[in-house]
Amino acid sequence: MDSLTKNKTLRIAIQGGYGAFHDIAARLYFENQPIEIIPNDTFKDLFASLKSREADVGIMAIENSLAGSILPNYTILKESGMKIIGEIYLQITLNLVALSGQTIGDLREVYSHPMAILQSQQFFGNYPNIRLVDSIDTAISAKEIAEKQLRGVGAIASRYAAEKYNLEILAEGIESNKMNYTRFLIVKDTNGNIKGNGRINKSSVSFSLAHEIGGLSKILSILSYYNMNLTKIQSMPIPGKDWEYHFYVDMMFTDYRLYLQSLEAIRPFTSDLTILGEYEKGKSVTG
Image (cartoon, rainbow, N blue to C red; front, side, top):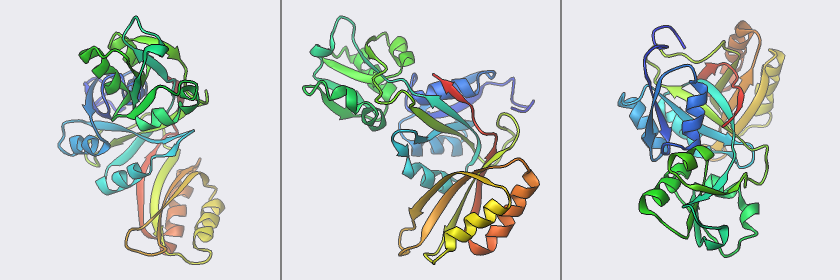
């Protein structure tokens, strides 16, 4: 964080409510910075708050180690024109929470974000009488139970959300795999002086390729020649263009000059080559 912003309160847009995993990731990434959380119902709302200057930066989940990539967020990010300035990997611990004085046997319904439900299917396989219901957010589900005093209803949420809304944890660590990490991107408008943490050793780029034999292989060979370590390749079809694809690539490097040369080397073989962000590889933390 640069000296112009390190002492001011940073307004951070998140998807979800107070106590959401986005909230936790934001507080851990900006642990040495005074912050104000700006909740949003959807990722599109998050980017709208950045464009309207209601928030200074945003934090957005992009992939989970169990559930995979959140594909719509790649498109939202590219179309927004925002830049990635950092990332953080948050180990996700899911808890079944409800009003105090209840047991799991008392619950008829459990609400949470679809990703959280997907990541805890194995646990609920032991409770076939509980109906799992999708909601927009883990923390908002917990908040509604507390505000409306809903008995017989539970939520899948963080410990932080349970404490914030004075709910009881009926079962802790219900995720199917304990190595359950979500990668969050720190994004901001291209204007402004807010910077990410640390030095630049990672980049996210996007480009388009026609469906031609050896097209992608050629790009990968060039990047390898320049010692780029590819950590993620995500392809998505281009609407309205049969068999043409847009690719999102994350790469790590030790030599920034070679990295720039690698982009110039692949440019003639791509279209719409865009640098989505240059930043330091994120640390893994436990929320």
